Image 1: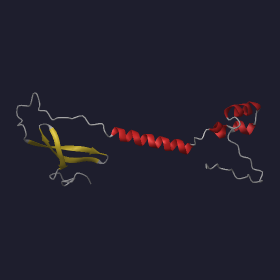
Image 2: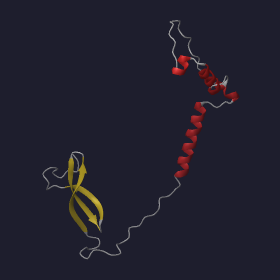
Image 3: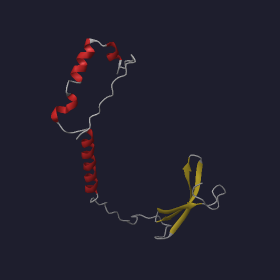
Image 4: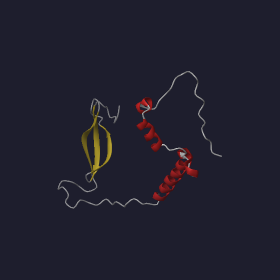
Length: 138
């Protein structure tokens, strides 16, 4: 059984609340628009048994099924390929260390980057810099 909210009766204090200036002025144009926008019996949905809750349950189930369906999608395979034209002074497979910095709101964090064949593999704090003392974040 579906629950239907019953509004409590209005207290007899003389206060009258309105939704907008059109309802406050209570013109015939506003009443005609109100009847056209919200006809009598629109709340019953003409016997349709769908409620907002049923709609949200259906949407949640469809999102769950869509998520399950996307789990079978595979990531494309990516292979590390060597450079076609490498720099003369590099030795393939040898680590290269260099000092760099990562910008932050309060300044920059000094780092030492470890790279192999031009690809960074590790970032760590620069222990020779007095600001960080080897830490990557403060």
